Length: 126
Image (cartoon, rainbow, N blue to C red; front, side):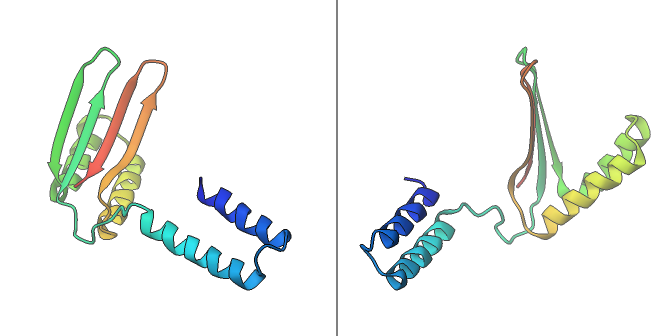
């Protein structure tokens, strides 16, 4: 049973007079506490050290790029200069990555899937 279904069930019991509103409030608070405990934590608090990019094409071709986080800015500048990336895109990507790094996020931060071709791009901070 999902959390929203459990909430509705509690409210229905109040409506039917099976439990008091005070009891319902305690149950809803316990449900909220339980839900917060079960949510996976995205950040570990420690600064990520690696940016990992995985590209999988529909034909099975796979590209893996592992880059130390401290070199990401340099890599994006190279991509901007030689890869045809515009400066605005570079700045936007850097701002998003710097925010994720500052917040100690880790794990998959981006996933793009082209359903038509089966291509997939995944970006991780570890």
